[in-house]
Image (tube, rainbow, N blue to C red; front, side):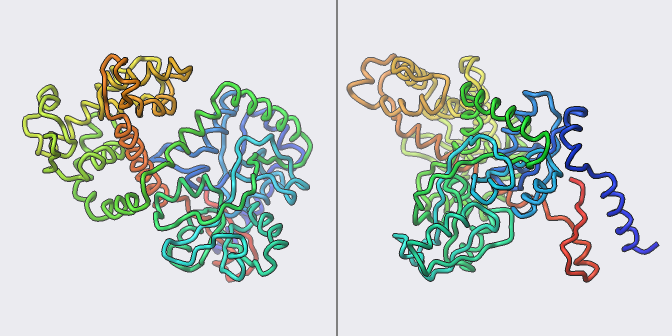
Length: 474
């Protein structure tokens, strides 16, 4: 039997197995399997090693867990494909960080919004920057095909009659940013939060113009029988998640790493990932495995400490890859601080000790960020900042609240009344922010390198121009 006859028979079987619009929600009630379509990107759904992750994934997983559903995720490779699966009732839900817009509101059901975003125009540093809306006139602007930003641009044409744009048929804004970086487009429009997160990979790109439009992000459901009941239940979950703080916790986990000290620092880090890290990565991975750590975290800390220089030495006498003091090295049984393996092991052991010694009711990821702050200024000073936060009515178990109080440890009106006195709190804040930046960048690099590939297009292989495609099971 020929290859194409096999494919044809497979397509017939798939059509027979597929659910009709009428029974997909009946099946959900019976088999408790929630089928969700999303897109593969750092802000929605990706694999961190063999672990599924992403803001949208974690939120939808929380919903499925809360309701006792098993979760099956389908990946759409363009937003048009995403909408098509919903229109045809192939899935129960679409979760892809999409804004509510008038075009989709007429054909699909939308949940209550769970995030707000503002679209921005980005450009490559050194090129002509648009400073006002009129500067978008007759420029080469690209936008994700099928996105809400097309509607934003259409509305702007009243103010900028000569505004034009190109719609790019992809599902991933990383590719928009790549096109601007490679100067295959002048400008691109995407969500501000998505850009800030992914800017770590493209530090030459800058947000030039805020389009000053507030967009509400929601999940979508097919507008068919049974969907409204699921829509109402999801709205109850989102309201409860917002009230309990679970929504903010997931948002912080994925978008809380987007502040960084400078684009030049990010650019230098990316260069050294290519030129220096390969020499040390096997050793860093080995030590991280010994101490049950993510190697990318250990790499981020060691870069912040020494820029992966095993002979680094500061004016205060700290030395080595992990910049250990003489006393700390002695406590950790590090004989030679300039030996990279000993230094990495000592630093990893020190981080694990700090994690263990923090109060048991501090949860991740706040526990990790506080341990890193303590690596820099000591547990005593960290505890002083936690006490100040609590006295201010803030939560001493939340990193952002403690972070806001750390600079007060160098305020002469405050530190004399603390138990451990003066500390360079601003440095500790920058220290943790930088590590989070480097750690997040290393994670994003893995996402960019290991993105899920689009399905094989059988029609294209056969020389047919139709859009028929046979997906590969994920």
